[in-house]
Image (cartoon, rainbow, N blue to C red; front, side, top):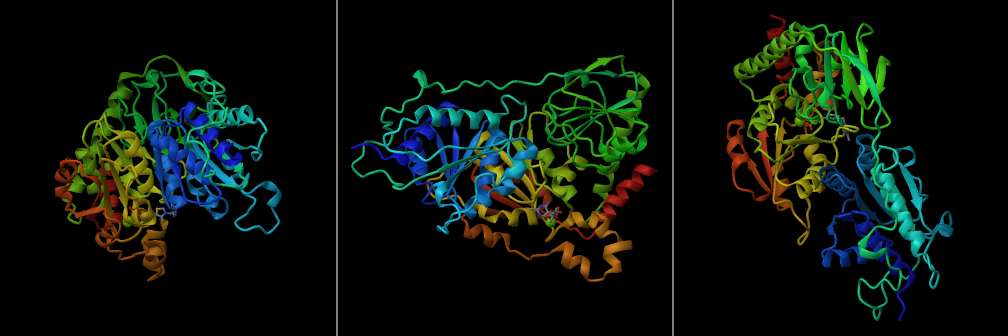
Length: 548
Ligand SMILES: Cc1ncc(C[n+]2csc(CCOP(=O)(O)OP(=O)(O)O)c2C)c(N)n1
Ligand SMILES: [Mg+2]
């Protein structure tokens, strides 16, 4: 009995993705995507791919993102039609701006049903608009028509676009596949890997070999000017700049010559070299906006950041001339020390435990060789300000659009692909992705993921922004601040974790070193109670200590 067309299409697409380098795939249940689901299950059983099944598409999208981020290879997420597709939008946005090869494989109704009122049928092809590198579709399979090379070459285009093979710009891709019924294999049809003659290239090769190229655009930079490097998210490695004082965000390569972000207030650079995309510090933003400062932007892809419109030159690599003055380097080193000491002194003198204390403890305790996944909002800022992270710890974070969503899922993906991982996140970030903690029986689970939640019962960051300034929000609109920005939730994290069969422990900040050193036991949540009411004062005290 011949294999029905949709079943064959599912098998060929999965086979070609594996040949093209896909090692993990995420699947959410549905009927329309059943041919792909069967094919993925068979490939997983044959040991050709690792399949992760999840219920919530938003969480699943972020799981795929975390897997792709840590593994550095494309990860497809396979979805049914309708709102399922819309639910991966957050992960697609993040993948776009963080340049992560996430492939949304959206099963569709045959296109002639669009607009007919057919159930669960929406205009989903092209839904992601400017957010994807490419939106690619293939026609529905038809019995007896040889479309093998069309399908396999389409998979090749999808993978090349996701990797940025021809652009230097990896990112998300939509692969929309209309599927006709029957959506299940005929019971008497041959085994799960029979391709009915729709075979790939010999020796497991991909149909189209498309190696990823690199952009190489040198720009001259005179290092004789007093220069700082600001290394942001997605910064490549720039050995030619290693000797320069560098304000590095936690996800940038660890600098040889670090400059604390608060040290910028005490120096007067003439030149700044942006590497990657800075996202965190207001002092950096002020420096880059200063018209007296010559700004170069060095990025690995086709885009470069220029928020204030002040960039003087841009390329993918600096071609240096001259050498930094010894006095300048000494001054930067001294300001760096002063800032590090001021933060440490103020934290030692502050009684309520803040996220800064937790970040310092986590940074010191992360085991060498493991990963640190940082949540948006204060945790990544706290690490930048108060923590020293070992050079052999790989730091990851969703800084593309800095959402507080999907972080548990991303950290789980990173741990599944990259091994032992500590995640540090805020309480709103944690509960926002509660469904991300659900890992069904039999699904691959991280061996060692410790999610540290700094729980200040709300959004502590707003206390540091204009909204939390006593002159505006906090006092002027009594009562409003806490409800509309603080957003306390009183969630019982222990009960939440219990419901999802996730180990939960409540620790004091001084117990974190032990909590992070103990033996691996799958996914654990380590909750530390923190205080956000005094956060603004702590930051004020650090600024005052530095001004002295
Ligand atoms: C999806 C999304 N919604 C809203 C925001 C705006 N936002 C930024 S930080 C923040 C509060 C985060 O609170 P929490 O995770 O507890 O960290 P904390 O600020 O307390 O350290 C919010 C709501 C966002 N970045 N992303
Ligand atoms: Mg919080």
